[in-house]
Picture 1: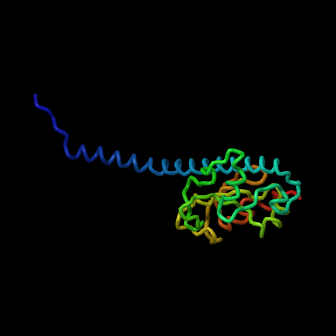
Picture 2: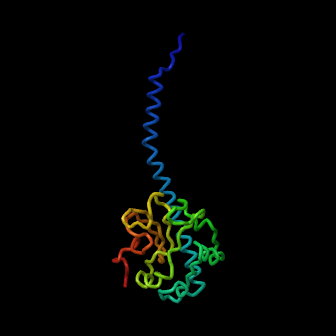
Length: 192
């Protein structure tokens, strides 16, 4: 009985079929990996928000919108996350909470660190918090963008993930300045 060998044509057909299947699955798998990073980022931002609310309750925010310390919010430190790290230790804070699952975007200038951004700075917080109230972004992650995107370029579409002072998490892919509240919140959403 003579055994039949596999021909070169048959091998090439099998390889071509496997290559076609791989080409179809690769984009789907890469999108799901990206979506899982966004989900982890949202989860970490929500945990930071919860710690902020616990801190705010303990340090008697007076209900007015203005300076972060008047609202019972931790003051921002000189380095990303330093105030949060020291202020939130009593609430179960671990360093991983401020690390972005997407790594560090080079335009965020976070060096070896991969910090999510504490949104507020006193230069704009006072005015914006009085305008946006509970709709003002509290913590944001802009690291889940392609590395060739310059975040401060208003004409290029970019992704931002944020949690508002109210606790609502938002993701947005749009043109504009992601460091301004209007990137995440439309003016018609603000109640006066």
